Structure formats: structure tokens, C-alpha cells
Image 1 (cartoon, rainbow, N blue to C red):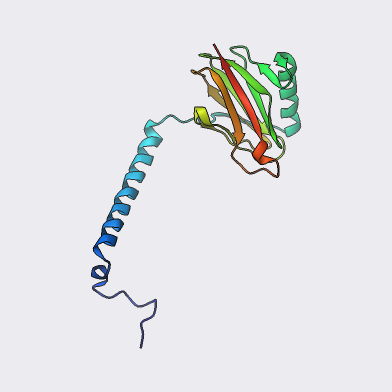
Image 2 (cartoon, rainbow, N blue to C red):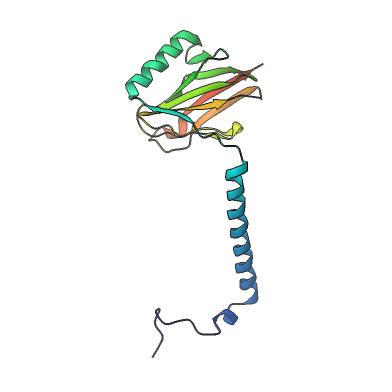
Length: 174
């Protein structure tokens, strides 16, 4: 009678695995141990951009704050020059990030962000920054740009048919 899946493996099961596969299994095990160790070290040594500032707000109230911010500092359609020391606001909605921000190199800003419709994931790839924008929650991340240039913001969370075209930008000037 043939064995079932519930029977213990034969005593010599390890010898049945070819040597090259045994080596591959050992390499996999060592990689797993290395990744666990590096992940643990990264938690205690690496810099995080976790939002430490956050609060609940209705999407309508956040939209109102963004509108007031844009009206106060707008320099072109959809574009705001943020004075040093001022907070910036970034609104996510299908299928755009609003407004585009102009920041000054070397100055520290708090960027408050949220979504008014569905969850979005603003990503600034060149700066290795990513956020989670959730309706009803505002989060603030502190940012000190140290490189000039134009940095695109795109969405990393599928948010509907126009997701692939969802873009915004941050311009950092001297």
C-alpha cells in the first residue's frame, strides 16, 4: 500500500535531494537570516519618514484648507511657492495631486497631505519618499530638500481608470 501525505518522510529523505539543490536550500536559508538581520538593524539605525503629525479631518475641511493655502501663495495656475517656515498642503484626488509645490533648498517644511476620495500613495521616487493618503486622515511629514530640481509625484496605489496619469510635482529652487 502506498504511503499517504500524513506519513512521516523516509529516514533518508535528505540524501534523496541532489547536492546542487541542497546547496541552493542552504543559500536560501542564509539569505533569509541575512534579510531578517538587516531588517532589524534598519529599524533601529535607518532614517524613517514616518508621519509623526496626524489628525482626523473631513475631506471637505481639508479641501478648504488647501484652497486657502493656494489662494494665499499661488504664483501660477496649480502652482504654489511655499515661503520658508510655512506649512505646505498636498491634496490627493482622482487623478491628480494638487497643488504643485515650489520649495527652497535647505529650508525645512511640513507637508500636510490627505485624500478626498480614495486611498492614494504619493511617491517622490527621486527622494525615496512615499506616503499613504487616506480620506478623513491628515498626516504631516517634515522635509528639508537638499537637491534642486523638479521631482515628480506619482501614485503607487491603484485608484481607478485614470491612475496611470496621476502626477504632481515639487520644484526645489536655490
